[in-house]
Amino acid sequence: MTEQFTTEFAGDGTWSEESDWEVVDLEDGTDGEAHVPVPTVAVVGRPNVGKSTLVNRIIGRREAVVEDIPGVTRDRVSYEANWSGRRFLVQDTGGWEPDAKGLQQSVARQAELAMQTADAILLVVDAVVGATATDEAVAKVLRRSKTPVLLVANKVDDGRTESEVAALWSLGLGQPHSVSATHGRGTGDLLDEVLAALPETPREGIPGGGPRRVALVGKPNVGKSSLLNKLSGDERSVVHNVAGTTVDPVDSIVELGGRPWRFVDTAGLRKRVSHASGAEFYASLRTKSAIEAAEVAILLIDASEPISEQDLRVLSMVADAGRALVIAFNKWDLVDEDRRLQLDREVDRDLVRVPWAQRVNISAHTGRAVQKLVPALDTALESWDKRIPTGRLNNWLKEVVAATPPPMRGGRLPRVMFATQAGTRPPTFVLFTTGFLEAGYRRFLERRLREEFNFDGSPVRISVRVREKRDRRGR
Image 1 (spheres, rainbow, N blue to C red):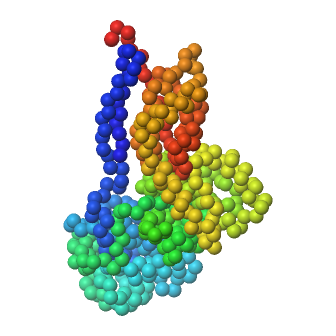
Image 2 (tube, helix red, strand yellow; image 1 turned 30 degrees about the horizontal axis):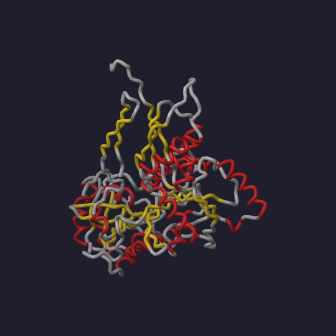
Image 3 (cartoon, rainbow, N blue to C red; image 1 turned 180 degrees about the vertical axis):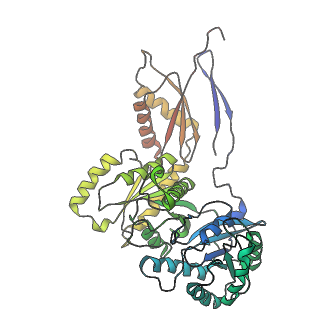
């Protein structure tokens, strides 16, 4: 909840208070249906046939990263969709190639996992190019599947291409459905067929809401995807030693500490958003959106290397978004005694903005201390949700101000008259005063507030409302 609090300073030198409480739901806006398991539709096919464009068309917004080069999408990425009042998940996948090597082999494995766990599959084929050897290999695998498969002939932008679609019957997957993902042609009829093919009970029900939302953030190749895979005990994200493997935010439900968590593996940020281009630009925007949609962020920092400008830029994004924060120093198995001493100095110098953040030393590769992340997340979220009763807050404030008054300003001593907590997530406090409070004194109050009420892991925001001077004649 948030509260609206209006206060006026009466002529006799006392505060006149009016409370106008407005209840606002700060959750994701979903209702009870969000907790009902929903079916999943996997979109598969060879690279650059328009899978991500089709996903964006189905969900009605540009979420999946699209660029006119093959291989942009690499992970399984799920998005919520709604058609004719029925909710389902659309799972975008990387291009599937049967003889892929290296990074592309990992991408193909993610597509195969999507096909194994989905309730319906859309095989997307480029109608202009026609059926290729790769399309035939994918179709051969899907013909053995017990999951409903719909063949989608994409890039049918007009009637002239329609005649090419009939040749796709040769794939043995039934009638090809002609669509243009770019222009929307035929997608409504396709979605009607998708709803008809989906079962009433999903194979792997994933609730659309409920679990606490955690964003995994950090620079490229710091181990975000490896950590997600270690926590889940499964290959949820593509892992490769090529920096920047993850492009889309990868959303996964992981059970930790006996309850589910919704983890989002984000793209590593190499450049400022204003300097990025193409897929990296959209990936940066989606990483920013994932942070804003999360409740708590785990910032991974490579403990074996000096803290970089990229690390601090991501840190600023989390702090500016007002999210709870856990800093995980990864690759701790590579840290020797000299590096530990150097890292202590870097933390004191570079992380001075977030001394309140929870810190954990882990190794995503070996699994060292990853179990300590759950208590750290719990502490950070408890602080992020915390509310201090107004009476207790003002009793504490009176004692602190009496012991350490604010500095004089313009020859006058400003008085702190009253305080209220205006909101949570993050905890936000408003101080009503008779004069401006210096930034240093506000930092002092924040530090004492943290000591008294224990806001470990969460940012705290303090704003000051200065009493406006009134004309003594009442004008």
